[in-house]
View 1 (cartoon, rainbow, N blue to C red):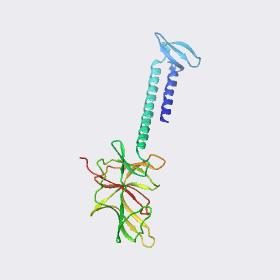
View 2: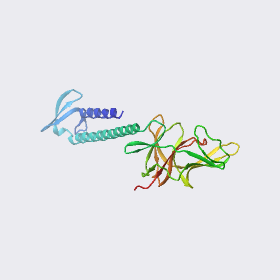
View 3: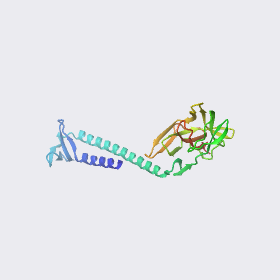
View 4: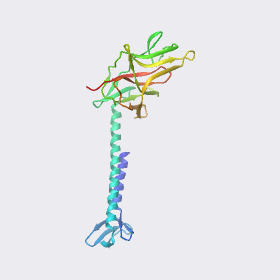
Amino acid sequence: MRRVLLALFVLAFSAFAANVKLYLKDGSHQLVREYQVQTDRVRYYSVERSQWEEIPLDLVDLKRTESEVAEHKNELAVEAKVISEEDQAERSLREEIAKIPQDPGAYYLEDNAAKPIKVAESKIHNNKGRNVLKVLSPIPMVTGKATLELDGEHSSTVLTDPEHEFFLQLSNEERFGIIKLTPERGVRIVEKMTIVPVTKEIIEEPIEVAIFRKQLTQDGLYKIWSAKPLAPGEYAVVEFTPGKANMQVWDFAIRAGQ
């Protein structure tokens, strides 16, 4: 599409070059296809009469004519450059999308190639113990307080860029984002949970990070990145439906560059 627009601008430029206002000193003008400044006259091709004509040079406002020609040439050149840059940006975006696998999951780019983040095995910890969270067949929820946890205080996926971009291929139309994890006594707490008595409503409290997001394809591919550089620590890209205890977690850590 951008190439088509760029071509139209080129045609517009050509059309403008073929139709110039030759201004006269009395304020009127002749619409001409081209003109030639000679010793004491201006020779021009009249668009209206489709023939070559001449007019004394001292009747022509040459300064105004040339100024307008130059101004329009500059405007068209600037607009053509903008279209060209947008076309290049779209081309780069298509190349970026092509690098991301279509399989659901979280990815990041490193050395111009997509790297998958392994989905973590999360566990729900309550007063009955710790149980592996199963998204497709959730475990019965016990009334009271609970936490969603990952084993170990540190992720095996370590990144040094605090402004890293992530790509998330959704498995379902769900909420997603980046959250901060809390290391504590051999685990990382993903979120605190409260299971309300009787109704069994689940209130989830992840520490969400403000992000920017951009939808890249219609079938659920998004690019997300933190609104501010991430401080060193433990984090995760997540996908979930609030209140369903079905959070998928792709954990990573930010460490200061060596």
